[in-house]
Length: 326
Ligand code: F6P
Image (cartoon, rainbow, N blue to C red):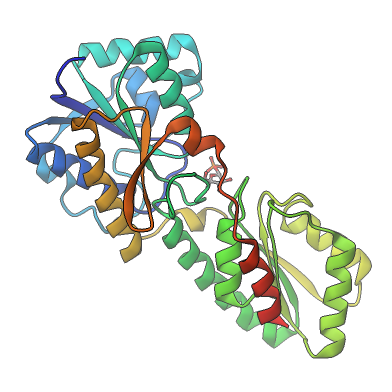
């Protein structure tokens, strides 16, 4: 294996606040270690197309506080094909890159894992997704900021829900995971939190809502993870309304607002720590692994495990949220 001298960095998949802080950390640590660092634009798409530029310390000035990713991102269909990956490898050879740092989520690591196996090429991953659905890190880069954004929005909706005595269904992101919904729900004091990790029974939900209203409530929030098994917020609201026509219901889908914005201090520190550690990991010979943080310690998790060993949500917290909302 050639000595690592030139590394490429890219962001891929859905962007997340803190990706820029991670890029900054990789670039500056790489330069400190005497490496040449190249920025690859538009994720794996840009790797295939050779959208690559050398990065200097000043290329990453003034970005730690910025949301999004200065390197841009994409969900690459071409990288899922053998031809696409071959083109990417040809570009890697052309630029004489010895290793890559990829920042992203499940799709990004799946691609990295296949690529490493095909071309025997060192890649280290950093968990960059608002969903927090990667095993091997307590928190992914962007998750904390996304929750804070969602909570701020939920608080505002609470004001109008209370004034109008309405029941709001608020949909948060999380295609396959309920982490954002759970934390947002607890922090916003939601009456119900619906997540893909548990089965949602509409009859049960309607019965409990009726009970709450009979007792003392006149308004409320139901936080729905976008990937809930009973459907999104619109569908669930419709089904509940069928059973409780007397209730004044409304739906808000928070959508991509959750992916943007200046990263929280927590996400900046996490991204800086993991970005810094990723360069050290490569120099120590790590590859095919995601660098994460568990119990404040840096841990390395093979890509396959990070993707497939789905971490479960905390069911006790889910139960607690209901008690606290009674
Ligand atoms: O993976 C992060 C995520 O924000 C998911 O929560 C969401 O389902 C998805 O990306 C949306 O992706 P896109 O922006 O490509 O529609």
